[in-house]
Image 1 (cartoon, one colour):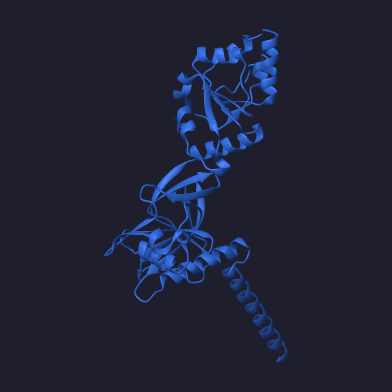
Image 2 (tube, rainbow, N blue to C red; image 1 turned 135 degrees about the vertical axis):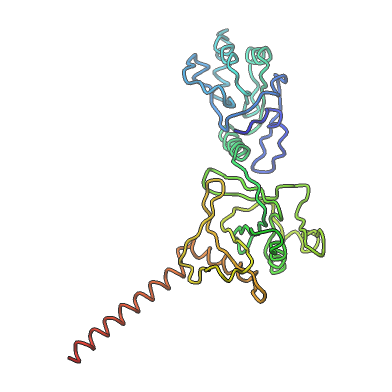
Length: 326
């Protein structure tokens, strides 16, 4: 399980719908504490004195309800439960709606060395955002050698041995109007345990490609910002390999081949390379065919069904004419 600190959470450069708008208002000594669980907890029961099954190892979220109860405890001069909360090794406490904790709460947090953060976001909105961010941070990751490109809206991962022509093929696809996501090293993360997102493993390199004979080229400068994107869901794996005359390649598309990455199975096609074959147009066709399958249209299955219907009708005719000729 990946571990990162509260300080790293504060330092995340998030944009638009992922922005957490966090700031530290107390307990700065606790910024070094580690967040080890990608989940949050509302400690209402703990404030009332019920600590059985207290999810102390999660980020504690204090909304308007918890804040109102803290004010009630301060008014009644009951701070025992607040102090007991901080006897647990909680990662941090976050107050939404720009709410300011009570003095008892701040004193207990400072004494325990636990960071107290504040956000202007409403509780529901903030919870949805931070869960999305935590799931992304804690997602299983793997770096693979290949090229990720968006073809007709389908994220296509090109794999194959070094020097087989993945980058050159991707360059031709970009020239034909498709978009590059990553070249050479693709970082793949599993989101929600059921689909894969891919992006460049090295952000410093940006959207550059290494083309043998040309060197490093900048796709953004050559083809414009419309030819790139930062990340893309991977929906198809295309494995490029040198043509092997001794290998039997699938000619009907009836064989359903898959490739497993981070526990997720993706449809995979092998495209043999030899002089005269137009590989980019084959990849375009594979991407369009995958989109059709997602819409419930299976060309190879329909072809097989038509062949079977033809064979059945042919057999019926033969039996009919054979019986009438007797």
